[in-house]
Amino acid sequence: MRKLINILRGRLFLILLAVILSGVSVIYLTGHGYLFRAVQKTYLKGYLTTNIDDHSDFENNVVRAGVPQYWNRHERYNQTPLTDTLRKELEDTQTVGFAVIKDGRLWYEEYWDGYSDQSLTNSFSMAKSITTMLLGKALEEKYIRSIDQPITDFIPEFSNDSLARLCTVGDLSSMTSGFDWTEKYYSPFNPTTEAYFGNHIEKLMLKRHFSHQPGGHFKYSSADTQLLAIVLKRATGKSPATYLSETFWQPMGMEHDALWSLGGGLEKSFCCVHSNVRDFAKLGQLLLQKGNWNGTQLLDTAFVERMTTPNEKAFHAGEAMKYGYSIWMDTAHQPAFYGMLGHLGQRILVVPEKNIVIVRLGKSKDKRPINKGVLDTDIYYLVDEVMAMTAND
Image (cartoon, rainbow, N blue to C red; front, top):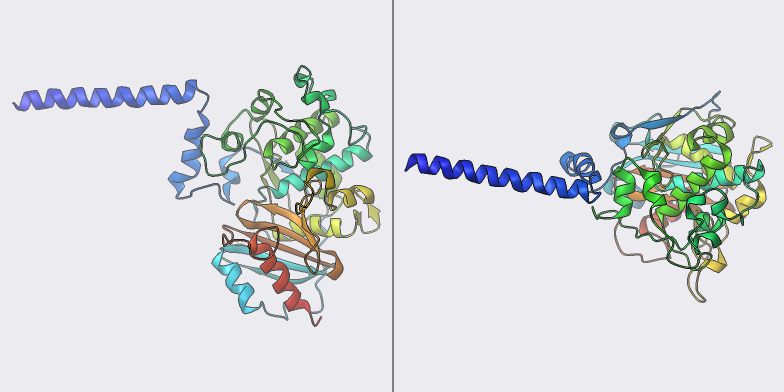
């Protein structure tokens, strides 16, 4: 009897092993091999999604800094405490770094959980805005003829797609491309997950197609920005990381090198610029100053205005317009603001009327229902509470 039990156990083991191997084979054969990496880098580390410290999980290109230009401290630096409401909001959402720039000077900063002004964390979708800033430079430097230039001039692989031939580089920046893409961050069987964890991001983009008329309605899509990275790399002949270093990182005197994670030789432009609070704040300050940095026009003023103005063509009549060219905004809020937003609550917010830039980096975001405007609840806490803090300065 014992011998029979051992035989049955052995056969059961072989059956289970065969099932597992068959499952692994099916996953690879159906093009879902990225799932193993996704599971390894998230669930097996105790996360349900990506995390702000994941640059070590991927290959990266370095965004080289040059001679650093340090923030001047405001005469009121850290003299006004966080409001109780704001502190609770920041701590409840596992904020790791927070700063306020007022009148071009560092007015407040604070760090949590062992992070500092030198810590590099993931921008997530704030990188979309950075990529569009690179588009602005490529236009200035004549690598790209105009914002209305067809993408097929740079991506001839789409030349046989009748809808693709109508798509412009501006459509990619404003997310009106009509590209076939579904944006989900918590689904493993989703192209966004494959783009994040896979090793063939350019191949992934080029094997898909366009499903709607370009230039029409806004549809948030990481693929649009990733296609824009392909355009930029082919137009400039430089990697996005190198181009970012040359055009902004070094001229603006960023304090530290940044990292830009790769998806198989190409930067993941829809996410994954890893930098710190102070250097991220400079990007917001550049937009606030209409592209001017210490007297040098690094980004064309008209292009900054295009980025930070709602794209009326992208929204239906009566619909709240909240997106320009890779920049989110609420023009109805008092005071009006715009900003770069990323997964898990990464924020660079600009309040032009008050000459203020707000940066928040952290591990999660407020998921309570929107109760004030058209954007996420936490954004309004940040803006409103900082307005209260700075009211007397």
